[in-house]
Image (cartoon, rainbow over the protein chains, first blue to last red):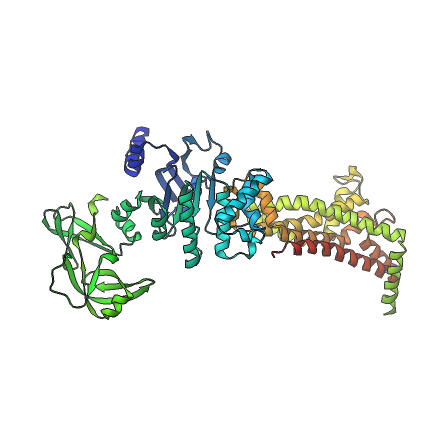
Length: 387
Length: 232
């Protein structure tokens, strides 16, 4: 039993974090066989997670995916039902006391959770808890207040801050501790878009300045892409896929990851023709050409990013590299900030993004006919048998 | 109307002439209720925080018992303290019935559930995640409790006021366990009761006014602290 577990772990190591193991850089944090339960429900199951020193790992996934549970377990705020956490190779709770371990970390929550005192005292609170001397505290706090552009709020009561200012204070409080690992649990989720953007920009800048290790949970994939070195996609308390941003974005392991990463069109069908690496899948009576190693008759899932779909109203005769051209009807148009999301019915549902300009130029309206085209190479193929 | 005016005149006369008996009664009132409140703060805050932060089966029953205790009738407390301290009672050997000590015990019993209940509510109204945030900042459990108490200081001050206000104005238990002995266990409330029953309304009103002023000034001080702490 033990042996098979070890084998399983090794397999997972190689699968999940092969690159890291090969690069031989020692992980700063390592979690093994983490499991969290509440009653009979399993909230989290992470067989293996390695965090490299200096990397920024984003945990992405929908609400309830287990991101918060994972962060709280990693910081030992939540005691795992089973499993171990190693900090720089030392087991937390055994070779490393929990308090000592927690003092190497800092955590920022979705809510600022500030204390009912001044901004300065808030930023100083973690240092005071550690019993640091007044003068030293002062210098460190001022440094962080300046870093987050809130020095002018110094003496203000935390109760009177705006959402953005409060979250800056909360971040400054965490950074003042100069933690070895920073844990951020959707710190921008409750901010309005402009505030959020400026804060993300600042954080991006700070991450570039100081080489910190951070684990950052978010349900916003763009936020994740902007800030992270690696992405872990979570759902149902499990890590579905972990890897570099490009790896995860371009090669999602399954439909769930794909849909979360913005593959708006996900179609399932059977391979009916094969010609070398190109193959045809039958979906809703239509034939879609794509590229990949598949067998004839195999069930596959095709994922198409909406930005890779082109729309036209007068199907031109000219030959393009888009092998897939399908006439369809516009079902719905939803404005999405910078662009419009157009939902079509081509015998199968298809989503395309177009700019406001194109929408007007082509006079696209709900109920109108339009032709959608996309390249065979723009389709990400997932073999259903693989899973 | 004359009765009230006479009473007020007499009250100021007694106050400004530093009538030794009145001064003695006033100081004893303050001492007994002050010590009782301090004891209730120590027990009540500890108990309130403990109940608020722990999870156990039957917590709701405990909380509802505490809430019921907030309205504990002083005469019932007086009755039970008397029985316990009675010469043949379980604590009769202490021989403290009809002493200020017995009054302090009775008043502390009255004030403790009030302070406990308010502490419990004050700690529970803090965001749940605040505890996690404090621990995540590297606090020990004791440091966390201290920070939570500081966070809940405004409602806790209300608890102090409610506790002190409850016992300084209480008469039933004080008269039962203190005995209203002149110059020894006579406090403002018990003296007021006695003077009223004797028909000495002027002195009774005077004592009543002193009691009101006392309660007012103590609360004024506490309110000052509370308001100063309000966010700017």
